[in-house]
Length: 180
Ligand code: FES
Image (cartoon, rainbow, N blue to C red; front, side):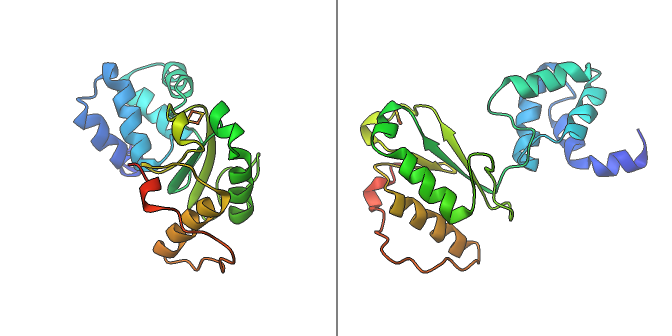
């Protein structure tokens, strides 16, 4: 391996080493690389394939088979809005519109230009009694309103050092709404 490649992929090399360069540990390796990069760059997949002596098509196939893995960069904060039946009936589409409007996103654009947020729609999260449900990173918010969703975003923006726009008629999400 060239010195340039070793330097460029030193973080991946560390992960491979921690996993004993074992091809049977491909999934945990991909998981750890994604945790580090926040996505799986194609050149990294090729590097992993070469390092583990696996066909690149196999590594690529695993990375694209599992919905959990992503080949495109995602934002630092991931908002997963449930659009299962119960959440949809209770207005998840209005929450999505509010988030899209606040973050200048659309059905075709899921990640903000500053790479701070990615908004995704997911199917039933299994908490239908709490619908509509929004998961922000690892935190679950229940009975979310569009205003509360925007306030959650603005709070993160402020924590990240940005300046949230003036909130005119935004209600505070109830503390008990966060169930995790
Ligand atoms: S439909 Fe949203 S949690 Fe089940």
